Length: 602
Image (cartoon, rainbow, N blue to C red):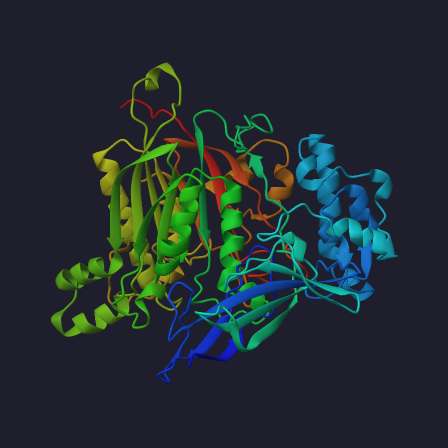
C-alpha cells in the first residue's frame, strides 16, 4: 500500500510571495521510494494524496521585527510612523536591535525628509511625507492597537477561510488545498500547518493518520528602499513621466545590466553571512523579479542566468511584462556537472519599444581554438587550450527602435542599436586570458560597426576593476604597454602590445555622474572614484568590495540622460554584505537612460 515516509520543507521560514513546496517522500506498493505526486486524477493502487494548508491565528496580534523578521517585534519607531515610512520598517525586536540598526535606519528618515525638500509631493507615495516635528525617533513599547493597525490588510485568501479548530485562544483557518502554497500578507506573523494524508480513491476517506509539519512565523518579504533615476544632462528633474511610470523622455530608452548570482554559486559556505532562507532560490527569484520589473527598463542584460531558470522562470515571467527574450548559455567543455545549471547571458527588450533584427553569439572557446591553430606551436597547443578555454560567451543583439528621435534629419530613417551582453568569468591569475577575451569581443563589435552606422552598448560583468588592463581597453581604447597586467602572458597572445586597441568611441555611462549637471548629483559623486571615473563598488561581499560591472556606450552616437542612483555603505545594512534579504545578488544593478544623437556627416 502507498505510505508517506517523510514530510519536510526546504526552508522553515515562510516568506510572503515565495512559494512553499514541501518535500514528500513516498513508498509505493512495490516498495520503491519516490517523491512524485499521486493526485486524485491518477491514483496509485486505489489511493491518492490529499493536501491541506492551515493558518493559526492567535487572539493576540503579532508584528515582526524589520531587522530580524523571524523575531516578534517589541518596539516601534514612532518617527517612521510620523514620516509615513512603510510601517513594517518601524518594528524592532529589542532595544539592542534598534540601536545596532540605527545607522541604516536613519537613512530611511533622511530620505523621507529629502524627498519632501527636493520634490515636494513628487515622491510621497514612495517615501511618505516627512514631518519635521518628528525628527526625533521615539522608542515605545509596541501596543496592541499599533500592532493591529500594521497587520490589517485587504488581500483575499485563495480559499474561503474555514475554521477547522479553535482551542486556547487560537483559531485554525484553512488557506489552501494544493501541495504548494504561497503565503499572503494575511499570513504575516502566523504559523502555517501543512497536512498530507493518504485517501482511498473509492470511499474518499483518509487512510491512517495525516502527516503534518509546522512552519515558523510567516515573514514579509524584505524590501530595499527604491533607487531613483538621477538626471545628468541638466534636463528637468523628472523628464516626461510615462503612463507606465517610467521616467523617460521622448526618443530616449533605458538599459539595465545586472549579474543576478546564479543559484549554483549561491552556497551557504560562500555567503555564510546571508540567512539560508534569503539564499534559497524560491525566495531570491521572486525578489530578483520584483526588482528587475520595478526598474521598467527598455533593455535588460542579465548575467549568471542558469539555463533552466531562464526557460522555466525568467523568460515566461518577463514575457508577461512585455519583454522578448534572447539567451546564450555558456559552452560546457570545462563544466562537467548538470547541464541545466550552466549559466549564461540573457537579454530582454520591450516589444513595444524595439524589434529584433539580428543576433550574434560569441563563444570565446571557438576563438581560442582558432588562435591556437595559427599562433601557438604544436607542442604547446594542449597547454594553450587548457589556459584559454573558460566557457565564457557574449550575446550581441541588433535591435530596431519603434520610437522616433524626432528631428528633420532622422525622419524616415531606421534607428538601429547594437547591444553586447557578456560575463568575463576568468580567474584573477589568468590576466592574459581576461584581456584577450575583452579584446576579442571588441574586435567583433568593430566588424559590426564597420558594416553599419549603428550606436553600440557594451554591458556586463567583466570581473575587472577600474584601472585594470581590460577596463583601460574598454573605456580608453588602448592599454599602456607598461601596464602591470601585461606582464602575465606565457602564450604571447598579447604581443605586440600595440595591437591592444580598438576604434570604438566607448565611454563608461556612470562616468557621467562626475561630468553631469543637475540636482542630486553631489551625493552620487561621493559614491564615485574620481581617479577612475567609476562607482566605488558594484560588487560587495564579506571578502571583496569593488567595481566589476559596466555599461559602456559609443559617445559619438549616444548621450546619457540619467543614471540609476548608486548605493553607498549606509544603504546596506550595518555589518551586512551582499547578498542580503533585501538585495538578492552580490552585485548591484546598473541602469542608464540614453538618447541617440545624429552622427556628424562624413
